[in-house]
Length: 550
Image 1 (cartoon, rainbow, N blue to C red):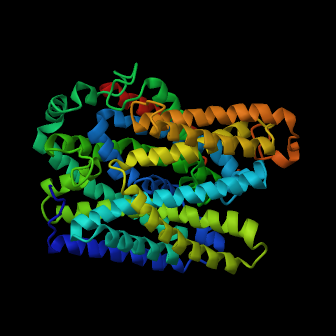
Image 2 (cartoon, rainbow, N blue to C red):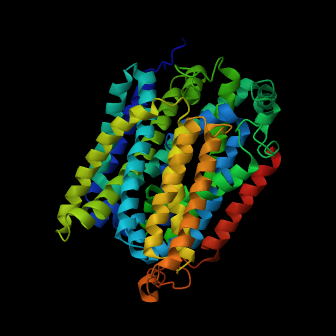
Image 3 (tube, rainbow, N blue to C red):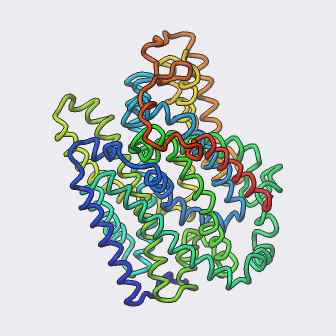
């Protein structure tokens, strides 16, 4: 069996040591600014838009993006771009233009807290618990991917690599809170690009450029279909195993909007912005680098497909998950290899830090403060937040071994999104645009939507529902969850009493509040900073990028 072992030199190790020292230094520097729990969990709502925007996209540049999307590039070809062009950018623009005024204007500290105000305590607790579970599961994915690199780098057993990787993230989050996470995410964004760009360029040179790569893909297991996005989606006879209906509705609408607009690990970055204008621009600023990420993630996956013999094994070093590390081993010289390994490790740390910082905030504010210990001094919740950080990392160590059972961790991630994010988004969006929806309808819609998605997953695993792939199951599971939420809301709402307009002000369309809208700083009103203008440009670019790979 082929082994995955990276041969690093002294320069490579020095680069790694310098990076880890810088990360910890940022954490200790951020500690001085932490005086209250809001400082720890939301950076005191004081950060500029360019910082929160880069942190927003960097928080997503974890195992899902680097390992998972490169694996998808090798397994599904250019159809992987759906996750960016229809599966990310439209939802990010929608979050900035439509939803951030509600989040930021209502001054909520988390997504579950918004549901508490819109619906009731049972809905709030259900979402807080499900979000906490989802975050430690996804943190395990990032930690497992980080451990794979450390295992390849140092030859350590997987469990040792998992524990060491967890301790690195734990150190700077516990010390510096969200501010430490965000500024490290900005640093990690540039480190990630510095590592992946040389890998992509050297890989393209090896295969004869873009045209040479296209010819090689045509002669691979993917064939011509691996070079297109929409051309073969009339049915499920394509590399992704999904029709355009599943892609548009399941991925492009439910999964995408469910993740980007209600996932607190992302929304938290925008809530830390210094004013409403910066908060609205945060996800839209992030959309522009998001459009460029496939060039350094999906393309290397394709290069790995055509250059690494035997890639796609069910187990061992030749799993799709190892596409990026295998390329690094085969293509990069010392020095450049150190930068690439540092970028890869940075991506996993950014992803796990986002999960852990989201977990500790929701656990402290939405579970501990709301249901266990109310009305305690702020110092108490700051201490609980640090303890929750430690617990979240420890649980993430356990969930990392769950991720280890999947040859393509993207499939696992999408399953989690269909279970947790899709029903939440449906409940959220119906409740936001239909003020008549009642608190009881909110709770039962969220619960039954989650159960519906879980039932689809179990039937698929039992062979009762013959979907074309794991990803098609997640698309349809998300769509069925959304449909279930809408139906349950329509049935229960007429039978129960709605909240008054005063209780819903600032939480639903038609009853907007004014909180946070008048705090713009000098220059925020400039035309080139308009969230709507920036959003339209981002959407136009996502459409244009589809044209050459239709």
